[in-house]
Image (cartoon, rainbow, N blue to C red):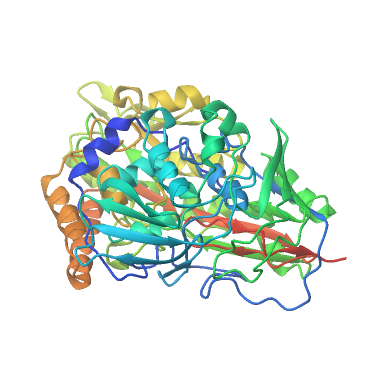
Length: 567
């Protein structure tokens, strides 16, 4: 599986710019599902929370879980990258737990109420829960988490993008009751809080500072971070006193496993070999060339879950030539043949994406999918109309300049595995037929992150955005986020799109939201602001010796506290 293409590290200014975003209030139990399943294979948990698994759980043993990327920090409040949230789900609990149908159920909050105006959320907390450093979990701890995650020095990019526009304050009403006040109604608030990014951490541990908390964060969860061997693995051990599982978990007590060895193996073929040999009992990301074999192997379970959000897409810099011309963007979209490129590179292990948002996103519509089916002829016609004429060696030219596209990407093999590079090369070959000279430029992660925010340094680049709401479109394509790091990288200023998305966020009428989000997808597709490739997904290969694994829907995080080893 292709991991996250870059950290969602954002400067604080991007979130301040989102302050005008207004979202309407929905039912008490949460809004629409934020990660509806699609193209799933034996997906335990998708459709009904944790699915009942046959067999008697066995206590003991250490699970070896092999994944592709190592987090830069184990504290998911800091930065906001997907490798953090996957491991954080194992040692952090959240206030609520999301189910695939969009409702939320109790977790650390036993119940909650929402004021009629949607501006106050009052949470009634579980009693008798402690963090694993002995600190009590109570209303003061919840307040400390909100305060800490909003501090600029915490660099809590993912949390801030949700909270800063709408958060007003938090008040402790009594030892086990806390109220969060919002500036304006925000319908996905409970959905957002279900993510591991918003897991509750020990105030005592957070007070040590970011550096130490990154290495050994402390939660109330079913496992404890014992050790982080940089470049190798994270060792997690069972929390023997765990008494705060979510309502939708099968196991309502301490984890069955003694521990988890969370191993980093960036090479997908080596991860696959580890699963086949029994060295690992579960892996994240099955190599495309082995996907069919995995599905047909009776000793392996495949779990596949499509995330909500924008999905993986190619950013086209709309601010400068050549992509400041709509016809050139449309020509590139026709020429890219992205669905075939994805299918060829990932060999069916990934569904393709052909619309503005992922098919797992609320209010997704297929109406504007496949708006640019592969056609070299249509691409050529548009380029002719845009003044780009056939030149030497098949590369089009205009005013003495070649139609060159500088495509930057992360050279780290964990971020850009062989299949992903093949995907880029497939697109490079496809657009060449229409006269584009697409140059693939690998960059070390630090340099790529820096260049990706400087339009003069790229014409195109890959990225994606996971989020539990279609308002992702506002983050990546609004006038307010135009100059903010890692936000509007396509450099779009479209007043109509801004108006439509803000109107969708402001209404509580679902029928109106549907119309408005439909319109936003239409605007983005017709303007070819980016080229969709495939949705982000959690793709697990699991040994038949491991039972009870399921995937939660808010961020597609594997849940291992219900799992056990047999034999």
